[in-house]
Amino acid sequence: MHKPLLIGPFTQLLPMTGLALKGALKDEQLPIIENGGILVSEGKILKVGVFDELKSDDVDIHPIEGAQVCLPGFVDSHTHICFGGTRARDYAYRNAGKTYLEIAKAGGGIWDTVTQTRKASQDELVEGIVSRSKKHLKNGVTTIEVKSGYGLSVDEELKMLRAIKQANESSSATLVPTCLAAHMKPKDWNRDNDYLDVIINELFPIIKTENLAHRVDAFVEESAFSPEEIKPYFQKAKAMGFDITVHADQFTTGGSQVAVDFDAVSADHLEACTEKEIELLAKSNTIATALPGASIGLGCAYTPARKILDAGGALSIASDHNPGSAPMGDLLTQASILGTFEKLSNTEVLAGITSRAATALRLTDRGKLEAGALADFVVFPTDNYQEITYHQGQLKPSEVWKKGINICK
Ligand code: NIG
Ligand code: FE
Image: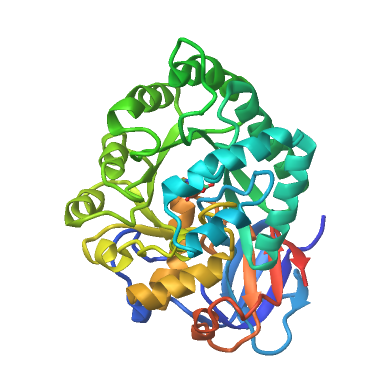
């Protein structure tokens, strides 16, 4: 039996515990343990407290040198990092003022990535996911949600979900898969029956049998699926025990109502949402997820995060990392920038990528540093936690720990 490992002392340790799931958070509410330590055994946290009080002959010590701030490993609750190819041409077209329709006509948009992803083998997709998740991990992201949605047929969606499962087995980060078979209507659909019927009747059961995902997502939008069209898909998903999450209110409203109606775990995007949707979400159990990477990638408005929090909503912040609307894929940079535009406290930003983001994925064993949680944490070389968002992603972690192992020095 190994002795438990005591890691520290950290100048400041932010456990992110005791913070409400919903509503505004002030920095005065942020718990900070000075000269903190974390006691770890078998990948989990045994205790969090003052380093000197945790020291004993019964523990081994991993010493932390110099000024360092420790907080839970970041959770990126919305990404599309399983894809083939690139959409650099779309980006240039958008910046040249071309419209969505013009870009689609020129062969761009989501369908372009579907075509490129279908050309990739499962192993090539695995390689892409693993290399992107390594980058996220270096930046302190220890849990990454990954969607399908660039397959848009039973076989191609399965290829993506199997690739995500395979990548999870060889990646140090935890990958949380989500089925996004309703990302858009496939342009090549030429069977008599409705595409969604086939997804419901053929794809969902295989996902269950192979345990490929426990979450189902859809893009509710004029260019994808209307609230009416998507109902049977979510009804069936819910009946089969999947958690529901929705791409909602990105350009037009309607999606967050669907999310609340289905008691979705999260409604993501919300750039177009109005007071009505903000009220609706604030009163619900559905977590609002802001995706500042999509606003930056598209040159669009940010999700009204301040208003959502002030109305009493729960706010997660995710990267939406994808080849089209959000190619940057740097969660901390994006969350920090959202903070400046939306006037968010450090506590709101940090909770949005730790404790509140974990709840958006229904994960109770991470996002906080407390006894029983996974020993997933990130360490920044500074004596003041305020420096983390201040550097807008340019202050890089000195150490990242996943399940009690120091994976990036
Ligand atoms: O979350 N909005 C829909 N889906 C993705 C974009 C995917 C793409 O452009 O390839 C999003 O932004
Ligand atoms: Fe997305």
